[in-house]
Length: 474
Image (cartoon, rainbow, N blue to C red; front, side, top):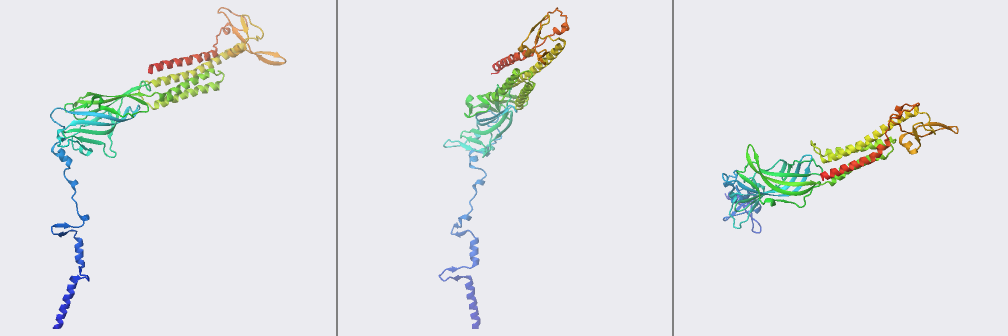
């Protein structure tokens, strides 16, 4: 039996060693199962305190509260903000002021303008009043605007408008302790502008931007300019390429709709005067030069057909190009503009210069044919005069009206001698000879005289037209 006792003691010592062992320096050695268990449990309790790793500690999320402090302070959920302030009472006065940041474009083709502005609304809503020891206002962004009542303003006759949203919505809401509210937006709007282009480009245009409530009539909402004429301010650096901004002004009127009633409407009116220098360089000066160029043909010999015809055609085509270019950038209005009058009168002058040469060439041809027939029927009159005919010889007269040829034999050679015969026949005088009275009584037209008169008439008429035109439109 002593052997069995030894075996039991040996087994007990082995089991005790596996449960707990002591290191060589007195440290207690723990088995793997105990160490793993302690690592998996992040919190260990020591007395009444929880200790553990700060990384694993979970902090409560305060952003998930059902109501923020600002909404609690303003009592947003305690009121129905779908109704206007003081519902059932008098109209809510809403003051407005505007600061124009830029006047971007003026389009004659689309009959509109684009403007960027800051529009601010002022009203009082006692539902938003709050207690403050410092009497300071609170400022919010666009997120709170969606939860309270704001005036439903819109731009009448607006084609396109938007509130800027870069890098966030350009909206500001400021609430004062007594319930006064300031609501500001940065808006770009494209609105219609009915332009009268009858004096274009020497015109002055007046455009207006109109602001109105969409739903509330004057019984519920009263719009007014907060500071009167000083409610509109503009940036000093505002400028346009084609216009000079003369003035800005504010007005207010009542607008009536047959189905809904009367509404307060605010107007921002501005007057623009067009710069003329651009059109002088691009339109008026080229047209004037083309007209003057067409007068050069009056100093060119009528027999130089290759010189005068291309000159006239070139000036006509150039004027047509100028007219087409101006009309391409203009709306198709049903009335005549000032620039149309100038261009079309210039075109008529250029066209008449071509017609003038056509008349000169035609009359010269007719005259030469008559003179040729007259030469064929007259005998050679070299060195003599016919009865009733006064003969004179002049190189200038020969160049002006034509020539008669007499073939003379001199030194065995034939040459042509020019002469001029002026016929001076009375109405009842009849000459007996080889030629009848009808041939001598025919009248000619001096074609050179037409060019001489044109050199004076055309410049004089065009100068008179310019004096009348500029005195009427400037």
